[in-house]
Image (cartoon, rainbow, N blue to C red; front, top):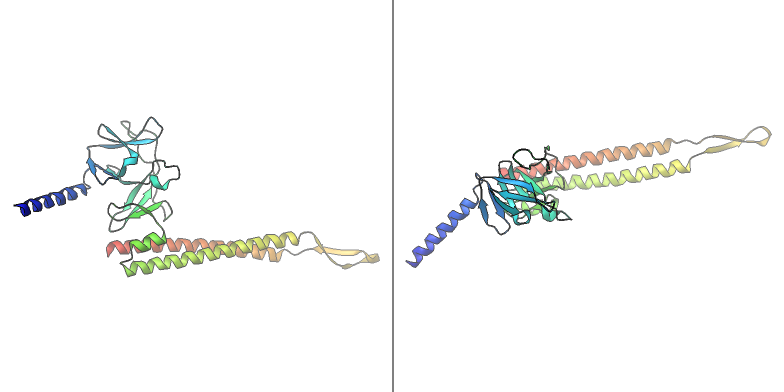
Length: 251
């Protein structure tokens, strides 16, 4: 009888957990790992000038909510990533074994029925305002270290991630070289300003000619070219991050 009771309780726990993970309904997922369902979930300003969530008629402090799901999408709380602790959310733009979130901007103008939503935005390239997680775990910023830990069990994804690291380091090196070339161009330009004495003329008077600025402009052009190369290398690296995540989610 005791074993049967334990089995029933275990089945109940599994069922409750499966319901908690059901995203076909609007819900709030708290940092305490509990869930509250609601017919409507709205984002609204509060009297302190911050933001709060309304689950039907109940006001819920943003600081308690880890994720929420409503008609606009699935959102994660990114407040801990802000230096001032201001309320902010990131929308899940990729769902899979590895979820990807992109921070969104609030629209503080009521849309309808006193509902405050997120402003229009386009999906951006990989940047430091993107986050990853697995399931309902804590968010982490998109960077090499966090991605390497998250995808450690997939060699193909790690290979693509290492390509990203290589191109990133190449891009940094090119930016450094570009900076050095531009500085050298400025130094030679200042040092070579004015006239250059070429000899003496009538009655021993010195003769002059304009100094050549060719070397300075060559260095300036080299710096511009290296800067462009660094930018292109960085953009290529970001695409390898996207490929690595896609490969991981299809694996």
